[in-house]
Structures are given as C-alpha cells and as structure tokens.
Length: 242
Length: 229
Image (tube, each protein chain N blue to C red):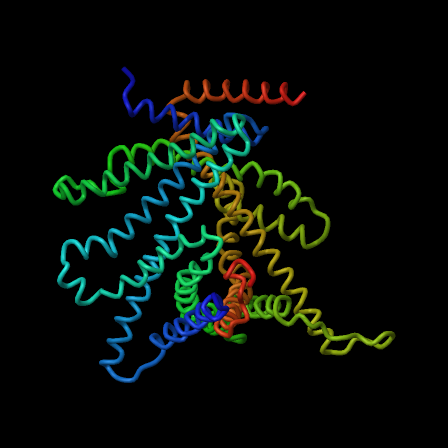
C-alpha cells in the first residue's frame, strides 16, 4: 500500500512539472495544477484569517472572559465592521463595506505616515551627507560617487522641469549642471538596475535548482510520468485547436 | 441612503484615524497620556488585524462565488477545473476548522488550525510545491527578458550588461576562479553605486507615500470607495 508520504511526494512532483509545462504551452494539466493551487491558496488564506481571529479575539475572550470584556470590549467594533464587509454582495447596501475599508486604510496610512518620513527621507538624506575631502582618496572618490549619483537620481526623478535652452545661444551654466546631474543619475541607476537584475536572475535560478532538488529529484519516476502526461496534454490540446 | 452616510462618514473616519495614529506617535503631553496613547495605538493595530482577517474570508468567498458562477456560465468545459478549486478550498477550511475545534477540545494534543495533520499534509504536498513552482516559473520569462535587456544598443545598456555580469560572476564560485577581483568588485558595486542609485528611488517612494496619505487625509483620494456615487 502506498504511504501518504509517497503519495504526497508524487503529487508534489506532478504539480511542479505540470506548472512548468506552461513555459512551453498552455495545456489541460497546467490548468488543473493552476486550479489546485488556487483552491489550496484560497483555503489556506481563510484558515490563516481564522487563526488570526482566534489569536487576537476568540482565545482571549474564551480563556479570560473577565479581563477581555473589561479591557478589550471595543474589539466588538472591528468585528461588526468586518461583518459589514459582506455587505459588498448587496446592490443596495454595498457602501456599508466602506466603513471597514476606511478603518483599515486609515490605520495603514497612519502607520506609514509616521515611519516613512524618517526611514525613507531623513535617514536617506543624512546618509548622503558625506565628507567630500579627506586623506583617503578611495573614500573620497566613493563619497563623491555616492553624493553625485544620489543627487543625479533625484534630479532625474523629482526635479522634472528641465531648464530651457535658448535657441542658438550657448547653454547656460544651470542647464549644463542640470544636464550633467541628469545623466549621472541615469548612468548610476543603470548600474543599480544591472545589479538588481543580476541578483533577480540568480535568486530565481537558485529557486529553480532548490525545487529540482526538493520535489523532482527524490521522485524521478513521478517527474517522468508527469512530464509524459503533460506532453500528451499539450499534443491533444494542439490537435483539438486544429 | 444619504450621501453623507455613504460617502462622507467613511472619509471622516479615515481623516480622524490618520490624525490619531500620527498623534499617538509624535505627541507627548505627559506620561499618563503617553500610556493611554500607546494602549489606543495597540488597539487600532488589533482592529486592523481583525478587519483584515474578515477581508481575507470575504476574498475566499469571492473565489468560491466566482467559480460557482463560472461553472454555470461555461458549463462542462470549465466544470472539472472549477470543481477542483471549490473542493480544495472547502477541504482546507474544513481541516482548519477541525484543528480549531481540537485546540479547545484537547489543548494538550497541541493541534491548532495550521498544525492539524491533514491540513499540514495539504500545505506541504500541494500548496507549497505549487506555490514555489508558480513563483519560480518566472525564471523562464526572465531568461527571455535578459536576452532583450542585455543586447547592447547604447552605452547605458552596456553599463547594465557589464554590471550584471560582474555581479553574477561575483556571486558564483566560478567567478572567483576566473578572477578573484570579481568578489571585491561586486562588493564595491553593491556598497557604493547600487546604494546611491536606489537612494533617490527610496526617497521618491517615501514622498509618494506621504502625498498619498495627505490625499486620503484631505479627501482627494476616493478611488478606495470603489463604485462612484
């Protein structure tokens, strides 16, 4: 008799192969794997939501009801708001769901508004204020690069009004400085994007290798059978289209 | 129902909560008030967690509804696939609820929603591999994208290519064998130009977040309401 472990390994290998078969062509087995993934993902999300509700609300209310109702009675409000979310299915009372969305959106925005000014702006600016002269030439060059690329990038992204150049007249110093910073910004970002792209490729390839090692290699026969089935599905799909 | 209840009250709620959340963090009046602010802040975060949980449940029900309607609309061609989705969704939830029940009925067993054995089996053997495969299938598309991106058409594309090659060689053992300098060059690129290149993007994203927050606060952003009044 097949154990649950072996069955699980066969299913894992088959799902991986069928999902990868989409890289060649859409087919019925890919569609099946896609729907299996969707069903489990949706079910998993609901289960996680129930787990969250259990942790924050239900368990404290059941295990320590006295403390809960004395200090956390206001949790009834988000529960009512959460239930109002189901009003979105009504044509008449759909707007009730907005109350819950409003609270969530406002909390998220409030949290972002208090973290972002410091983390995204102040700290980035203070980290760019670097000494541009000193005894260590390597450090000085690095600091110049850091400042110029940052200011150049800001010029490219934020100062989007380019200074005008008068026809026939030589370019003004403001124009020249702006243009130089603009190009330094672009070239700096190209280096950044090159690094990002390389890291993305390496991460994905690493992921692919780990999937091969975890799911495909231990069950070679499952992978082969799944691949044959996917090939048959692709051929049948192509024949049907003709 | 009047426009006030449908549109303006939610907007007032948004403005009030944004102001309160920011005030809880920045305002200091006295030690007692700071303590009350901290409690209120924690409560608001818990409110968001509870509402998000309901939103996830609504999302799951949306998927269920969508597939039931799809079976009705598209008939036998779609039925097997949508039935699989519906069946697995319900199965996962049922196993989760069984785990939930046992977490109260027999707490010593240590079974919870996410550690229920059948739920774990489905997670490990169905959800996790398909999630990983869907995520990593992008590598095939990245391969074709990199072919297009790495074609040297101008100096900028050349710079992108050179940087990417250096980083890839710096990250692999073969790079170090070809030329040991790849490692230090990769470190320098990541520390200096890469950091500097992403700094304006971070600042821009921060400014964008602040602007969006202010738009919500001043009722200029209304797209979150969905249907237009």
